[in-house]
Image 1 (cartoon, rainbow, N blue to C red):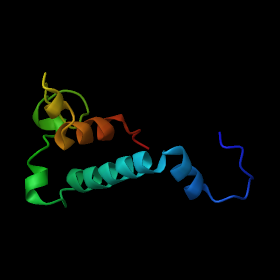
Image 2 (cartoon, one colour; image 1 turned 90 degrees about the horizontal axis):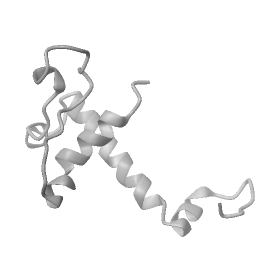
Image 3 (cartoon, rainbow, N blue to C red; image 1 turned 45 degrees about the horizontal axis):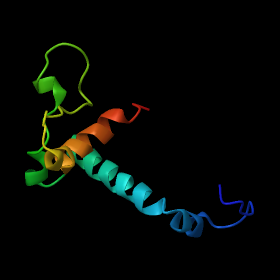
Length: 93
């Protein structure tokens, strides 16, 4: 992508390509969602998410979060929605 040498550091290349902020954003979301999943996040953040096992009694939804429906763009970009989408899309492994 950048035609860089094999032993060149990747962080400057990510910054040059404007990829690093995007990756750091998703890493921070995943770290916070891990805390939500394990119930070690602050209480006000825990209240934003509902586990699927409390919504549907069938199936194995223990690792997925319920995603609220919304037509408003501001709500679609909210952390409570984006965090659940990112966490639900992660592979179980």
